[in-house]
Length: 166
Image (cartoon, rainbow, N blue to C red):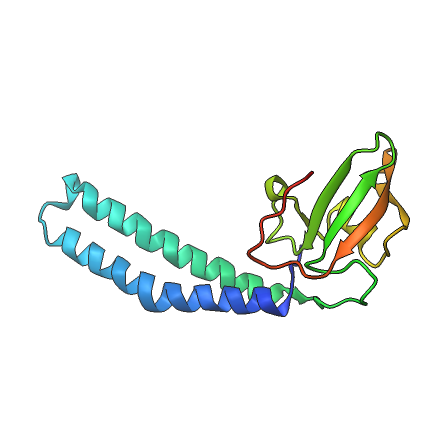
């Protein structure tokens, strides 16, 4: 499946790749050299740990580069009165009246513990493009669905902001 990324996500990934190539890679190579210089490699834990760290860094670089090559770029803008990317949405679960706040994000930034939900999740798909006051159906699977009422939309969602349910 292709990841959906915003331009901001792409910039952050490119920054991480550059940091890993220019800083982490050099440190990892130096750590391997220092550990190798300690002598017998058969019992040299530092050598194997340094080598593992270097390989994990290279794997992460390849993973991020592959993600960028195959990603679909999605717009992070929406109309002023519609739910869109990076908006904080207050919803009421029709079934029990419980109120939650969610922030719509791309799948790589999704974190249910922080109420950051992916635009590809059932709730994210249901909310995107709707307005405050709308009643939306969240289709979990063929047999299960429920309804939410959008109470408010906050367009000032800051990337560093911590989202909590109330």
